[in-house]
Length: 260
Length: 84
Image 1 (tube, each protein chain N blue to C red):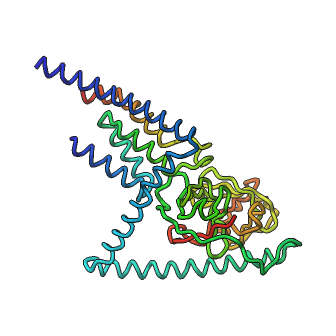
Image 2: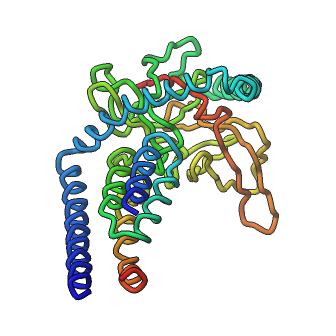
Image 3: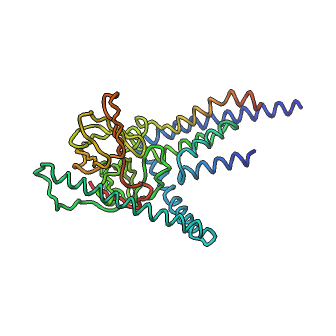
């Protein structure tokens, strides 16, 4: 019994030593990552990207298996109808945004100008990141640079490239928690504070804001960054809270257009 | 018990790549509650290396690593009291 007590004491001390070593190594790894300019992060994403790709394909194969046909068929129908609805909302929002751009007086804008850039696949899960980031399959070899904009097919800005590797990049969503984006809503210049998937802007009561109004970003070439989803205009508050989100689900996107 | 520890750690690492971020969070909590789990800290570091961009999160701080370290060490007195 004495040996048992001694053994449990020594194993506890060993476990504690391992924990202290793990804590020390965690700090060293993170500091090293910062010192190396994110090379360890790049390595981690290089390891995770093919795993995510293989896992995604395996998931699709399992879903297409006949065993789950009935449930799968219903889910596919639901997904198709949701995608159709989102596409119509996107087109409606894009039209309103383009119409507003057309009305604003800018001698430098040419309606027929083609936006330079390239289409990049989204190669990571959208929902896994707690920081509102995701990876795309284009990098410095494709002329992608930090600060490049990631756009949907309707020219809505999804996010900005924040880290670039040779063949993949990390994009930070515009509406990630803590992100502040200067925007204009019905000609009012306000700041949209990201809260994960949507943003909230405080707009003075004198400004008339309606659901569906496009939200533009002057910093990003007056491109649309979302549409108004809800307006909380309680007169007891000094300002009205306007909730902004993209008219398309990020999870449904497979490609984004990256523009410098 | 070791099998459970390994299983929770594996779920956490897989979820870091595929699933919602709160699943690795729950795995870190579960591991820390029961074990002096160095893999909980490793999972936190992995999440931050994978997803943290400069300037993202709370002033660019590695929140998952900080959370894992705090939780693992915060549960140490509880583990010593209940499990020894």
